[in-house]
Length: 316
Ligand code: UDP
Ligand code: MG
Image (cartoon, rainbow, N blue to C red; front, side, top):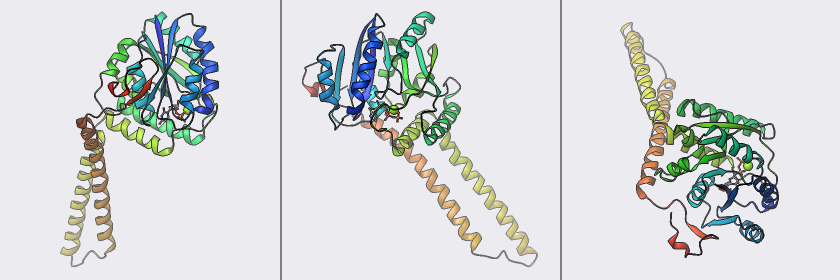
C-alpha cells in the first residue's frame, strides 16, 4: 500500500525545515510505504532550492515545481494529478495541520473502510477573530448551498482513497473548490478532530482578496441560487413600483400630488444598484463558462524530480 502526501507551498522557505522535521517522523512511524509530493506554487523565495537540498537525504520527497503562482486549490490539483498512492492526504505546509494526525486518518480509513477522512478543526483559538468569524460565515453559507454532507470547519486537510482522487482528476470545471466538491460526491466518510495550530513561520498566503475569490468560486461552483435572487429582487422592486403608482394615483384623485425629487432619485439609484449587482452576478457565471470553454491548462509544470522529461510535455 502506498500513501501519498500532497503539500502545496508558496513562499514557505521559513516553514519548510520545521515542516519536514515533523512530517518525516510521523510518516516513518506509519510502517507503510509513502511518497511526499511538494507542489511548489511558483515560489519566488528559496523554497524550491531548500526542498531539493532536503530531498538529498529523503528520497521519498518529490518536488513538482509549477511555472507560476496558480493558487492553493490549483496547486492541490497539480499534486492530485501527480501522485500514485492508494490513499492521498493533502496537508498545508505551515504546520497548522499537525502531521501526526495523518496516522489516525489512515487507521480510520482502513478500519471503517471509508473513502474520505476529513480533518475537522475542532479548535480554532489560534486563528485571529477575523479569520474565525469569516470562516464561520463561509461554512454556514456553504452548508446551505452544498447540503449537510459538508462537515463544519473541514478545510483541505483530508485523506482520500484512489477512487475519490480519480474522480477529482476527471473534473472539467475551472478552479474546483475541493473542500466542497469532495463532500458533494457522496463517498463514505469519517472525520478526525484536531486543534488548529498556529502558523509555524512566515505569513499567511491567503490575503482578504484570495478569501473573497475562494468564496465566489465556492458559491458559483455550487449553486445558481444567486441568479434566482436577481429574479426575486426584480419582482420585489416591480411590486414596490406598482404600490407607489397606486399611491400616487390615489393622491392625485383626491386633488394632491406626491411631492419630491428625493423619492425619485432614491428609486433610480435603488434600481440602478440592483441591476448592477445582478449584472455582476451574471458575469461571475458567464466568466466561469468562458474559462471552461477556453480549455487552457490550469497549471504548467516547470520541473518534476520524478520525471526528467522536458517540461513542456508535462501539460496535465
Ligand atoms: N498556498 C499555495 N499557493 C497560494 C497560497 C497558498 O500553494 O497561492 C499554500 C501555502 O503555502 C500553504 C497552504 O496553501 O501550504 C495554505 O495557505 P496559508 O497557510 O497561507 O493559508 P491560511 O492557513 O492562512 O488560510
Ligand atoms: Mg495556514
